[in-house]
Image (cartoon, rainbow, N blue to C red):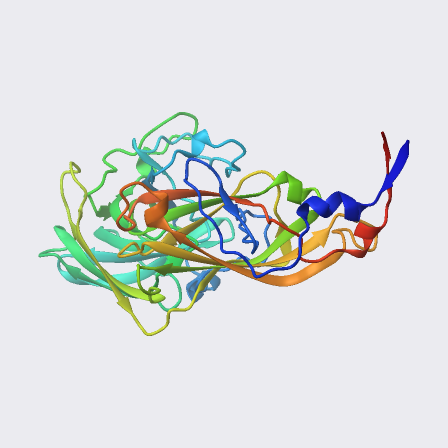
Length: 424
């Protein structure tokens, strides 16, 4: 016997009467997190995404002329709360080219090619020269003119418009520094780090063989600069070691196969807000970092003080796409970075569009069924991580979530058409 089924009948397994939206139910990190009722979406940020947002715009110097300089930044590998390598289907960014250079053990190249680095060039007998290192086209440039002498470099990345910073000597600048950063966003899409070592490495460069930069280590801040002018300065290739001031969090999201078979979800905006057990954190913070030069056996960061500032507790947008990004059944990662002090909860608010699967020349993405939907979910970190008290700097927390709504909110007209022949 031949029976005729339409798409509406096929979807009955995902249908039920509309009811109040149920809260998100979180499962252990040893298994995926299932989102019921409201659909919360997440996306891996990649070069193909349009309209990606930073919480603040890079400093204006990135648009101005500067003097040429080479820059290489490295940071310690994050301590992962859950090894990423054990998760199948995770999308990773391609490894950066190192030009045959061997980074120090335990460090990796920073993904900061578009970030502005705030740097103070200091001397024991003079006031600091505060400047920026920024990317102009394919080249790095500095917005300050340096003499041919030794400086002690202290700074941070990324420097954003609105961040104010000052540096005082910790005794002498050759011995260390006390850096004060104000108006720092409490949540960033980029890793927030402080310089813990510097070296002029051009003299050690080898074009056709593996090489290392001699004496590039933490706790050593002296940089032997050559005179930089518009024609360039031979030997001005700045190697910088950084360390993490913020915590990282990787969100791995995927769509359940049953739902992906009938609907396409496109993420348009994602906002984050950090909270303690009682209330959301303020959106700005003051960071005071004390650094002490040493022999490299310990971290030169001897103290870090975070002080929330301002009255705003608004959410921070860390991804935005006008067209939207299609989520799939494979995990996709979007990293965020948080001021760690007292953070025990993370609130995600996502904006997304929902399309059916009826792709036509007029509607290449399918028919738009629901537009600009919003969903807010709260991740209680104390429930997700064993013996968790608050976020820690330099630790990356991995969270895995699956989008699996328990019913469809809206039927699409094509759902009622396109009969399917089923032979019993």
